[in-house]
Structures are given as structure tokens and as C-alpha cells.
Length: 309
Image 1 (cartoon, rainbow, N blue to C red):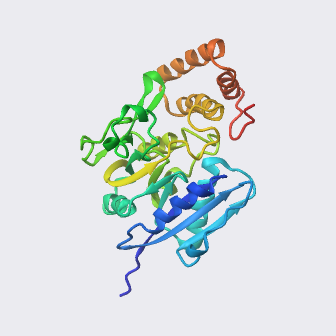
Image 2: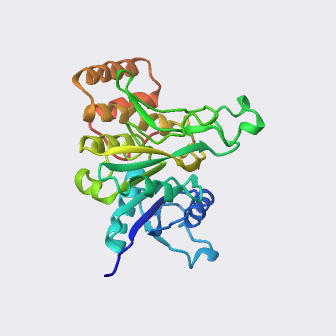
């Protein structure tokens, strides 16, 4: 009797960040893959200069596909997942940010954590700031850099309409070394069973960028699946290195403002929606121009990609 190995597709979406994307690809190619076949799919998401694979990776299990338009985080990953199903009949998707690198055991640990548990639909890594790119880097000793947490599980604070990362900015001293469940997995390192997407669908393209991972996670949980935080899987993240302008940019402010309202409209209780309405009016009164545009576009149902300036 022939035993068919399961298949994992790592999907990396590139948008004008060839150097960072190459590092992400190399980390994924080097990742351990015992017990499953592993394919890396790179989606060049309408980059100004088409992405090219380095010659030394031509024989690696990598496929490069291109969209001529920027489809955003949602559309780029959806394209990659669709391709993975069509070409490889993949069993699992691993969404890895183009500005992130997974450690050698990172993919293996995620796979092992959920493969035999029918109720576990998603696994997510412990994520550090890339060494030297900590948000408050001046506050840490030299020996602590590279061990500052960016994500150790996700929680949603509905009264404040906020999705936050457990442990963010803390030095890792082992305080998050137990596997546990969480409210949402970050799209930076999102490992999901294909069968789950058949129940809940793929990423909602209305978000385009930001909060799409929280929305996906909430849909997964509503379908009865668990989201498992796996500290044995480690990823390093540049923190908005793949976003034009980086953390705090107008692009980030706009999509975070609009999409937190969309997320609440989709999943919040009536009380949370009232809170969102108060937040919307307060932002229209006192927010920045780009934040007010985010609220206005939400109220006018302008979703997906929108002009920011």
C-alpha cells in the first residue's frame, strides 16, 4: 500500500522588497520538513521591478508567480493559496511575511502541533523582532537584542476595539514557552489546514491590508477550530519592513483605522458596534486627515485598495 506524504506550501508575497523577500525565501527553503513535502511559492505582487530568484536557488523547491497588479496582503496570499491547491493539492498553507525569517525547525514545529488534532485548525509561531530592529531598541541591553518578543499569541480587547500581541516588547525569559490557544494568529506566520479554508473561506479581500488575519482567525474559531500558539516555532520579523513607510506610516494608519471598524462590524456584539460608532465620530472630530479618510471610507463602504493621499 502506497503511503502519500502530506504537502505544505509556504507562501511569501513580495511587493518591492527583493532583499527582504530573498532572506525570507532562503529561510523557508532551509526549513526542516520531515514527514511532509514542502514547496515555497513566491507571489510577486505587482512589484515595480519584477522579482527574480537568485540563480543558486533555481533547483530549490520554489515557484515564482506574478500578479501584474498589487492585490494587497489578502489578494496576494489568496492567489498563492489557490495556486498551491491547483498545482500541488496542498494540505497546509504557511503564510510567511516577506520581511520575516523562519528558523530551521519553524515549519516542522507548526506542522507537528496540529496535524493529529482535528480541532486544531491554525498554528502560529513565537515571533521576535529582528535583532537591531526592536521598536524600543535603545531600552535593551546588547545581550537582550534578538530576544525581544513581537508576538507570543494574540488577544482581542473588544471594549477597546483592539487586537494586541501578547508579550510584545518583552524580553523572552521563557514566560511564553508553553503551547496554548489564542484569539487570533498573526498573518506574519499563519499556518492553516486547507480543510479549514474549505469551511471558512480564504482571506477577505475587503481588508486588503491589516486586520485580515484577525478576521480570518475569528471565522476559524466560529467554525469550531482552535488556534494554537507554538513557541517551538520561531520567526524573526522586521516589523512592517514590507510596508511602504513602515510602522506609523499614513498607509498603516489608514488601513488600521478603516479595518478595525470593518472587523467590529463583522464580528462584534451590538455593544462593541456602539463603541465603534463612538470611535468613528471621535476620529472624524479629532483624528488626522488619513484617519478621518479611513472612517469616511468605512461609512461609504469603500473597501479593498484605496488611494491614501
